[in-house]
Amino acid sequence: MDYWLLFWRPGVGELTDAQVAGRLRAGDWQCVPASDEVGAFRRDLIASDPEWPGMALLPRSGSGQPQDRYLAVVFGSAPAAEQVRDLRYVAARNRLRMFDPQAG
Amino acid sequence: MEVEPATSRLREALALISEVVAAVAPGAAITDLLPGRVARSQPCGGEARDLVYYRVDRQFQARDGGTGADLVAPVAEQFAARGFTVRDPGPSGGWVSRTAVTGYLGVTILGAPDSPTVRIGLDTRCGLPAS
Image (cartoon, rainbow over all chains, first blue to last red; front, side, top):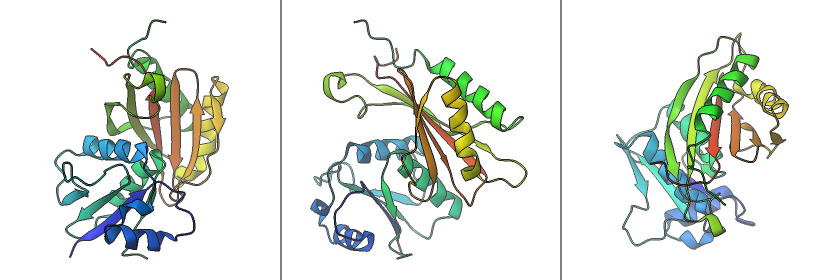
């Protein structure tokens, strides 16, 4: 079962993180603001590990979906705590919210 | 105005990080967290949109049972003593953080309360791509 982590720029108004995550999972990317930091975050992740073993970045490059709204990092199984900590750092470095839908 | 390469101050900046870490955690080893890389987005927007900046991320470990969060403020004070303007942007994703800037460098310092690791992200001033 896939394990999702979601990242977006804070300041989404009245929505809770869980509500934002639900909308993003449903394809409603317009619920979060466009943000240059999302692109910087993607680039930092790719710089950290271009091979991406066991992970996928969504939306994918060339998918036609705007990529400046949010980023999902999808694992084939639950990531290690250190891996999550590293992602949390890179997100904080780019001033993005990180949300784990599995943790609620 | 002549524009320098984005990497022109990089060696000086990395030496500065070594100085700061030695001051707050003598003997601590500094390791790469993310490789150095060219970035092109903010803070190179507006008139500087054709320029790039350079990003480097380093980390070290707090000693004697201390946490990364404990050392964020002392690291920031070291940068302040070297002429950086320090700001507290508030908690970010569970991390304690500070930013420190001069005219040509930006530093982000992050530490978590559940880990001994302190992470220092460095952004150089926007400039020409490195040749």
